[in-house]
Amino acid sequence: MKYSPIKNYINGKFTDALGDRKMDLVSPIDGNALSTVPMSSYKDLDDAVKAAKKAFETWSRIPIKERVQVFFKYKTLLEKNIQSLAELCSEENGKTIGESLAEIEKCIELTEFATSLPQLVSGEVLEVSRGVECRTEHVPLGVVASIVPFNFPSMVPNWTIPNAIALGNCMIIKPSEKVPLSCGKLAELLKEAGLPDGVFNIVHGDVEVVEAICDHPGIQAVSFVGSTRVAKIVYQRCAQNLKRCLALGGAKNHLMVLPDAKADMTAQNVAASMSGCAGQRCMAASAMVGVGNVDHIIDKICEEARKIIPGKNLGAVINKESQEKIEKYITEAEQQGARILVDGRNTKVAGKEKGTYVGPTVIDQVTPDMAVAKEEIFGPVISIMRTQTVDEALAIENANPYGNAASVFTQNGGMARYIIDHASAGMIGVNVGVPVPREPFSFGGWNESKFGVGDITGKSSIEFWTKLKKSTTKWNPEAGINWMS
Ligand code: NAD
View (cartoon, rainbow, N blue to C red):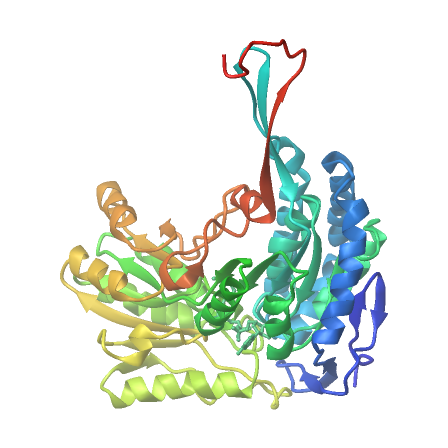
């Protein structure tokens, strides 16, 4: 076991969970044992809520310009520790070190945004009638929770930590039980940056803790990022408890490739989008619709895919179960008549035989009714469908229940604009394979890729992590004059 058993982090201290239930943690890279993760209970969560509630009394009263000083320091610490954070991220998640470094760079950008919140969060004030002033203020909610998935062990936590805390809330995070190590390191850095004890807490676990978070009366708001199946459960359970919730779900992102697209650039973007982070990105290209004759581009996509070497510039998928599920999708598509142009099944990396790898896979002649066309595969696989017109391509894109991202590859500006207007997704790319909006633009999909109002990052997150106080004041009141006068 490389690391000592993982602990919760409550009130500034790493503490053992109360129960005995735990899970083994192994690295997807080579199957080596890393640690054990505790499966916490309602009582563990309750301890964290009590600590956070106490910390909120002080933290929420500190002016925001002072609160963000912690995040200026935290940003510097992320920069200083980028290599060790990236190594930990790769070890527990399986992604390449380059991908992990990019993930930490994104954490730095997210933190930079949080330091700008004092400039963005000011309310409004207006003299609404003689001597009468109305004012709005963004007020923190209290104790909030963030439930996160396995695919970005540091970045998704940092979608919520800096903004929610800088805005005056105290947070409990529930990391994915598949990648629990990175959050512990983030807690250490936040403490080193000067964050008071109790403002940030970690409770590890699985369904039991998630249900406790949804039910606990001391938690005011819950953000969730993960699969659509669980996003629905969490959103509905929070609503039942009359709790504010923003739940981001899964994705099936369509790339529409037009015959006039620049072939080399398109092929590189498609291959990078479908295989980056081993396809385990909610922004990954998962389905491609070739409009008209794009055979020359598909040939180049295959060439690019063959340059991607598992264990070198392609990481592992999270575990055996995921590896088997991805391979099953490929086999089923083959049995249904699709053509496997590049086959990533049965991939082994020398010296890392227990690692869980799937090579890049390009599937052509997919029809819209096949599972590989409709469902989230979450592996380095692209399913290619063909249409004669852009409208047919859009009909396929619109019919999928998700709506995270869509992209078009073309040199025709009018056609690109038409696709921006008609694709049913929250984030659209033009000649961009992974159209993640960078700060200060917010991140969030549509349809079954997101439940709740607003987005999780950027300015939009201010509305989620605060409530609006409206005050109406009149000084020097005079008798006999109506305040509305
Ligand atoms: P997941 O839904 O299995 O798990 C997410 C979180 O929910 C974890 O913390 C997990 O412990 C918890 N959980 C799992 N099953 C649960 C249940 N039955 N009840 C309550 N809680 C439960 O997701 P994952 O496999 O960790 O992550 C991959 C998924 O996340 C993909 O679908 C991906 O598209 C999605 N994702 C979406 C976004 C986005 O921005 N929309 C970003 C990243 C990942």
